[in-house]
Amino acid sequence: MAITEGRNRRNHNLHPAAPTVPVTVPAPRTNDETIPATTGAGPVRYVWAAARIAIGWVFLWAFLDKLFGWGFATPAAKAWINGGSPTTGFLKGTADRTFGDLFGALAGQAWVDWLFMTGLLGIGAALILGVGMRIAAAAGGLLLLMMWAAELPLTTNPFMDEHIVYAIVLAGLALGGAGATFGLGRIWAATPLVRRFPILK
Image 1 (cartoon, rainbow, N blue to C red):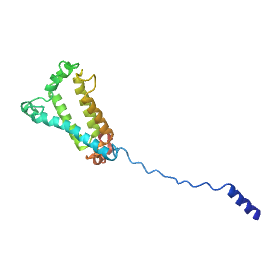
Image 2: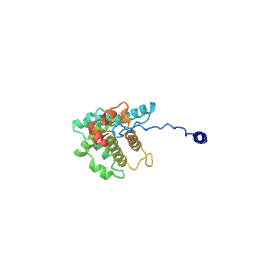
Image 3: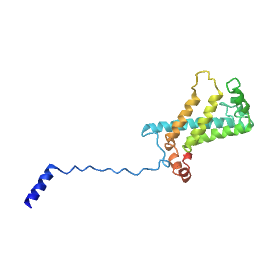
Image 4: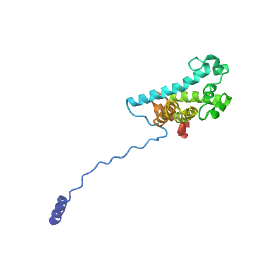
């Protein structure tokens, strides 16, 4: 008995117990489709929120000025509510551009005016409120790219202008979840409709 106990004691000294290592259990993951990603912590999220609201105002102001003719880019006589066409001026001005025939043919058509104005209103309101950012970014990017194409060839740069820059920023705002700061993005993302159809986030 004593021999066995002595042998066990020697074996214990030769082979000490391995040190215990704390095991960290990862926290359960949240559903990324219901809680939007943020564009960062601290001041950077406020910068992105300001960019979102500023670009939203650009779209919304274009809608209001063309609708009421407040004299900034649209005189009152050419306001949409007074029978003017919000697309004619711009599209007719592309006659000497690369795709002038295509865009010139669209100028003044009722369905083009309605589509254009609805787009300006929807994109601007969505960006300012911080809801529907993905659809707003996609629609806004498409509208901006069409306006860029209508002005080709550019006169001040081989290919880059503000339309492309705005489209890139819109994509960043949507992907970064910028609607959660100074906006309703987080509340909107938690609604049953958006949880079922994340594309609406």
